[in-house]
Image (cartoon, rainbow over all chains, first blue to last red; front, top):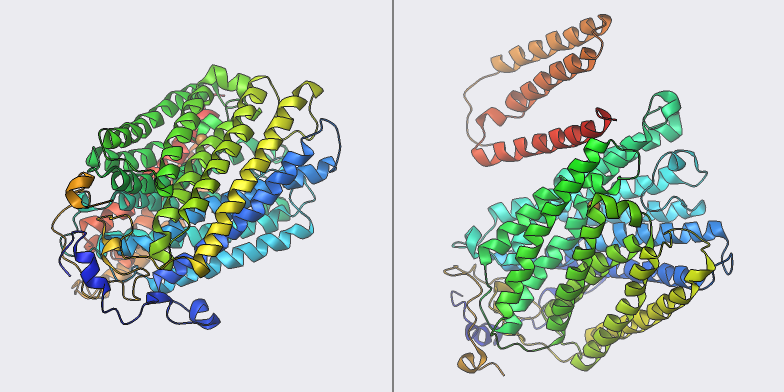
Length: 546
Length: 92
Ligand SMILES: [Cu+2]
């Protein structure tokens, strides 16, 4: 099939022998042993979405506790456990793996015209290592963690909670992340269809390439850090204990050398999804292709230079404070480049507002908000004022939930018909979006004000003057939960009773839309020859798009 | 992988002996107290050993540019984590 225009689509679909494509084979073992990148992607998606719901329940409990300023509903220790679990589950089991290992696994080979990833067996192994990590993490619940998801020493070296077990679980999850990243790097370098040059890549591929580099380079550092922490806890080696010649700030250096770049593991793939969705629903070629592509690499690179901005009040040297604050501002440049290019893409386009586009626009709006408040925190002086307050919590949720999560939801709604072969209900999707958008802002916008007013994060009890805004924020979390509930009802309904999806419901030009929905196991009957970039969209009236 | 490097086993023996000599050097140096230089010397010897292993045992010497790039980029990030941390500890 050499035709890469939308008209070629119908021809490929008719006469398809397996209407359920790669989903044809049924049964438990067909999933456990599968080497198909699409099935492994789905396994990752289901697992991570499950932990998203679990982490969401922890979040709701935290918000309920914060309705009252004193020690009501949960004990202070229970509160510490809840926010540690919320952070650890959401970060390590949901937001890091969801887009790369889930949607990335499913769509990287499809988007570059390959039949699978470079190492299908390593791919399957990465999933089961991930599951092993989850089991270890669950085992740590016997003596649940109360250190916060950041594991800071000296407390994490001394608490009776099972730090070693939880960090070993995260070690395994990290290993799975490295295997996935490595697999994608080799796949992108080696398995491209003929004619698929670097500048004909869909921008999602550029985002995933930059992401994979971070996964491979940064993750080992946090793995080693957790090993050092385990050695300190189990054998009394003094890496971080000053009494034994160690340095507690060293832990923070190592931890953030991973954990700052890893926020770009979360956000870069989401930005890739936005770069796919915006041109499709604007019916215009993407503006500034190379700028968006290279800015992904720039973000990945600069992301490695700024970790110290988490440590301005940790007793780090003044010199380091100034250097890290200065460098932090550079992250804003490639990020702004992307935002401006997306807006330029929409300019004078024939924009339609289907659910993927709604989520993509929400991403741009909320992420810009999150990014700009990051400037307050990157600047040394304002950081000292806002450090460890709800301002940080709000900023983080605007970038990660308003950014990555909305990007994931844009991707899920955009690619759902391709993955499952069934359409979602657009009505439910819009209702879910509206409640999510309102609920999100009510929950987290309030927290900017709380934080700027001085409410500390992670405190189980707070001064009574902050109660009214906390009640607003908690009410917002219920609206948000209602939106997400509707969204998941729509997903489950779509799985079973959704209308059969055409090959290209959004008239996209990237390769995945040229194969049936759901795609056959081997993806392409014949590997396509690529002769052009995938963004040659024209205005609606000329291409018959309704 | 499939191409013949044409070096024979001789080079492996030489590299192996070099590694043994360097290990001996590490042990010998550990008896001398060089102050701050202790760490620097130990790291230098270890780096030379690692390079030998990568170049010959892992065939990096015979690989193409792409493989070299992927081998060198992480070293840059290693320097970054060390350098960034030193910008704190050296100036406290
Ligand atoms: Cu950061």
